Image (cartoon, rainbow, N blue to C red):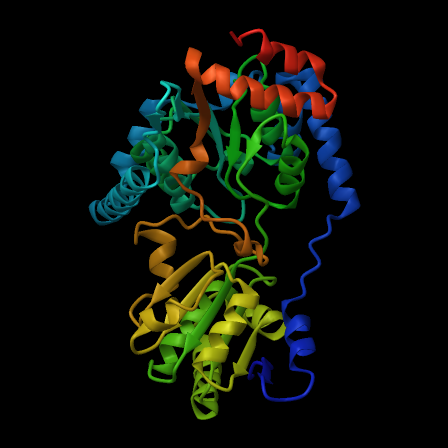
Length: 437
C-alpha cells in the first residue's frame, strides 16, 4: 500500500498557500491539559512530597512511603553502566566523549571567560560569566527511553560548571531503563528521581522536603510536561517548549534516493505529528525518492507511524533551482536541515535559519541525534528564526561589571543627571550629582 504524500511545485499558482498548509501546526494547548497541569503544580507547591507521592502512585502506579524511595543512588547508576554489553557501553561512552568535547570547545569559543577593560579615566567595565547553581533535566520515560537525551542535557550543564544536576525520569510500574541510568552515570548526573509528568516539573521548580529547587529545567516531555514548563517559567528558567520533530532535506538529485527516503523516515518515525520535507529541482529524482519511500516502508517496524506522519505532514517539493530551495528553507526554519548536495557549503552560506545543518550526503541527521557532538536539543516550529540549540551558554548567566573611577564619575554623573531629570526621576539625578566635585 503506497503512501499518499503531498507533492508540490513552487512554480504553480498558489504554492505559498499550499506550503503554509503543509507547515501549519496548531500548537495551542488543550485547555483540559493546561488545567490539569495547573492543578498538579498547585498541589506540589503547597503539599510538596505528599503531592509528588500521590501523583506518582496515580500516574506511574508506584506506591512508596517516601520520596526518598524514588531516588536512585550513584551506586545503582554505576551498576547499570557495568551491566551493559561491552559494545553498547563503548558506544555510549564514545558518544558522551564527543558531546563533551564539542561543548568544551563551545565554552571556549562563546566568551564564557568574561572580560574586563579599563577606560582612559580609570573606569573599569566588563562582564562576569558564572554557571547556574542547580539544574533539573527531564528525561522522558514510559513509551520510550532516551539515553541520548541524558547526554545532551546533562553534559553541557556540567561543562558549563553547574554544581548540581538533578535528573527526573518517569518509570511506570517501576520499570527502569538501564541504558538511561548508565547514561546518567557517564554524564555526571548528581541525583536521579524516578518521577515524571507535571508533578516532577513542579517539584523541581518549587522544591520539596526531598527534592531541592533548581534554577532551570531543561529537557523534552509530553503535553503535560510542556504545559507545566510554561507555567513555572519565571519561577525558574526553561530551555524551550519543543514541538514535533522536523527534517527538511535540500537535495540536488545526486544522493542515493534510498538514503533520502530513510532520512525522511528517521523523523517521521518519532510520532504522527513529525514533519519530513524534501526540496529538489529535479522532478525525476523526486519520483525516485517517492518510489524508495514506498519500497522501504513495509520493512520499518514503525511503519504505521511513518505512514501517518508522511501522509498528514510530509511533502515532496519541486523547486525552480537550488537558490529557491535555500530561500524556502529559510522560510521554513526547520529543526534539522540536511543539505545533501555536491559542494554543500555554498548552499549552507545562504541559510540563515535552521536548528542544525547537516552538510553533504554522508551527514545523516541520525548521527546528530546520537554521537556527532553538537547538541540535539533544537528549536522547532520555526523558532530557529530567533533561537538556538541547547548549549553551554544555556547553563550560564552574565553579570555586568561596573567600577567607575572618581574621574569617570565627573563625566558620567553629569550625563546621568541630565537624563534622569528628563525622566522626572530626581533621586536618580541627585545620586549621580552628589559624587560630582
